[in-house]
Length: 102
Picture (cartoon, rainbow, N blue to C red):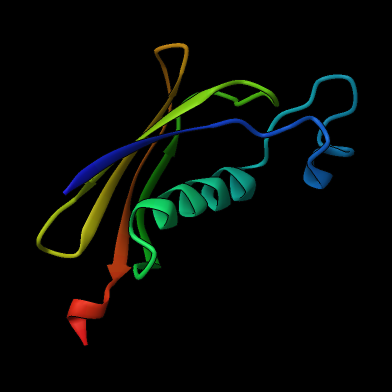
């Protein structure tokens, strides 16, 4: 299974206040949360249950449009890639919990 989503973190996001004044950068935890929300839009019954691998490749600024690509493997691992203007910003592998696993 695969899917993609487009997201943008607004400048008004509370985590950006003070992260870094005059040069805002989206914190990694906010990026992961946005990836999870985008994943849930495609697969509402799935949950992240572990982060197997994460590479933050480039800083993400607020209001930048991110393209997130998901690929779910039969092993229960979801590969995620995110890019901004064709520049890779994140690659990761998430362990998933799905209803089929119960």
